[in-house]
Length: 142
Image (cartoon, rainbow, N blue to C red; front, side, top):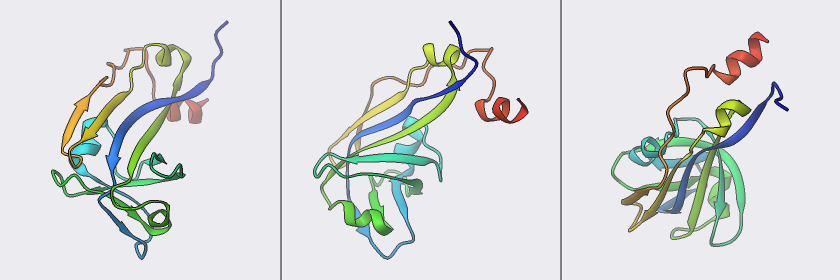
């Protein structure tokens, strides 16, 4: 039985992202090297969920781009208290889509190593089916 609803599925994942800095005085967010954001399709100011593999902390914030090719992962604001330089994070973003689209969806997943400079892409985003309509647009228009 099909339901006319939207579900949240994994859109992007940066696995084993090493924290390179922390700035408690910043207003908030997680700075991510722009090339890493682009590698998995995270856009500036997108909501993200982070899990700290080193201490078990989980938190939601938003992504902001740091200069490309620097491998930067910087905890800002309150999140700076949830980790230390050298901790490993899993950074996740999600998308809402119909069950039909979700069944063929493949998230973009990258595993990082060597100071966040080596990226191994495991599953690039699947091509969007022609029948796909923007979830938020269809939710707003009914």
